[in-house]
Length: 530
Image 1 (cartoon, rainbow, N blue to C red):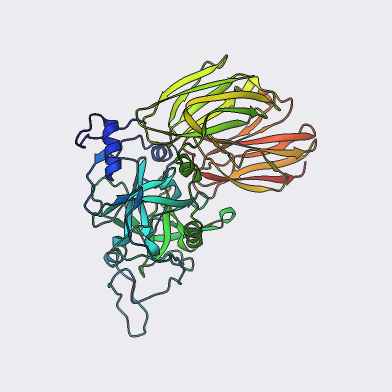
Image 2: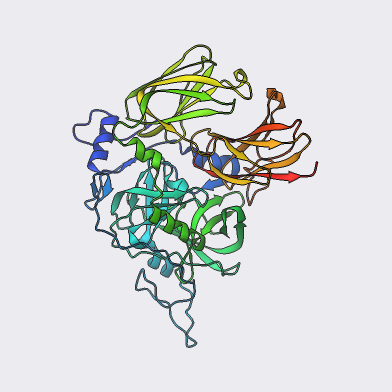
């Protein structure tokens, strides 16, 4: 990733010095990047993960910006709650004094678009990271709800209110399956909004999207669009109800509010399908308990936090690969402008790759034979990934191969909980593409002639599936990319009908394709009659 900023910090001679000085002073920095994920999905598939790509921008923080020791300076917030009231007509709203007129029969008239905007917009925030932008919803306790794909893989983000107040705040945690994240807490003058239950609405009901689509302003104001509930969709594996609406959407809307005519937040804007002309929002009723759990359990980003501990990790590791799908991943925090040297030496031809926090491929060894060495210059602050594996056709199915991994930077082993899980026919497991080009591998025992359906299910995580066995050549390995069914849009799901050629243990490997890092998927093994 190339970084372009305007150097404005006094005494800064380089871009890197300016970035570090602005970070230390609590100043917001706008980066210029490729907007890779949004652009890839939008151009190739007409699917927009509605976080916006970056615009080149640098600004001084307003006088309300406060950062102390890496956290927001704020009074202790009240205990969080996202208790779900029914989204029934009401004549008042907690967020503002705006009221709906009340006819003689006591029912409330629907609010107009301008009334909804006045009610909700002050509590819809602009969320910004070094890789893109999105929207967020202020709730009780000073927390902000947004999408997982808006904040991943960062542990700190900028939150900007419509009144121009901006804060550098921590990410509390995220759920990649529901695509929900929580940041904060912040000290805010705006009234918090409540996540309400709108699943009883009828198709054809009027709704509004409030957020920050395609935003480039220094002091952004929320936008509002109007549409209808086209239909409801159920993602049963994730336990989510999704609102489908024709309200206009663009990158940057992710994490914004889907609001009904009572001014209630009934959904969190998530995905847009531009070619089909509709967008999708996760039901606030389903998101609310997830939000509560993230806040109460502080589902922290453990690999980011552990790397910030003094002396974390080591400079050398001895590792062993147990099969040709096995790999080892290490993480390290890169300081902008520094270089990192890597050496890999082992009993087989190893391969390594270094990726930035945002999935940008920085370096890969291409010599294969002998000792693998390389040096990479760090261009972006954050957690980087060193991925080590064996040249595929050099290692038998069952390995093993041993390596020495050495680096000039302290490395922290990344333990992928998905790798090496043993499955049985009938299992369904959920997993995450943890980093750029992550390959999760599982084992399963099959009898000769046994036929199974191996499938993945996701909404925006593009997966490939492979089935391997002892004695298989490269040509014998079964493979599929996008043959599976999907909830809507273009399929990212794989599906293989597989008949075991012999009795034994097999490996099912799932690889996340470019743009899928941070995303989640389900893997299922369904029995079929032979």
